[in-house]
Image (cartoon, rainbow, N blue to C red):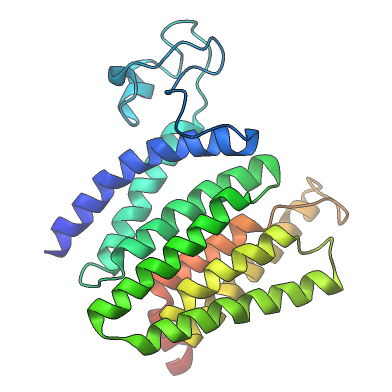
Length: 257
């Protein structure tokens, strides 16, 4: 049964990844994600269904528009494959849980937000707020189906705790912690605390740790200076996904090593 769920989730992830590419391109430009239909940003030609198959179409077209031969970024298949892998991993983790849809939404949202933050240094409210609302609704449904109201109350409190913690850091050092990261923390706290207070602490810790390590490496390689801004959203996303997928095992290993 788990294998079936993983397969279905991975295939779904390819399709969702294709949609995320639209979101990643249009949302920072304040464009509608519904209209117009998918088109080449260079020549405006509509993309035919046969040329919109995840990953395969990019390979067949050799990364170029069929009409104007403009290059199509490798980001497109990378996002599609990444979403499929994430969805498969989430499917394996929550195959027997009513919370599966909620964590699929989280994976998709974090992937889109990370890609946008890397390119634009932006975590758009148009993604963060719906992600929070969907998370609260889907986790509430999961709590009702599983009869686990305590987990849902903990999730809501966790969102507030994470938001409060990062907001305090923002007040102390506005340049070091943007409000976009603070708003995202509300979402991350919601999903992490559903799995436990320890998982919440682990997810945030891994986010800060990965950000610090990568930042030091970039400075050591002279690719960044101490004054340069590095998007923090992707690191929070990585820490959260690691904690969601393997948090209980990591905490058990740490406590019993």
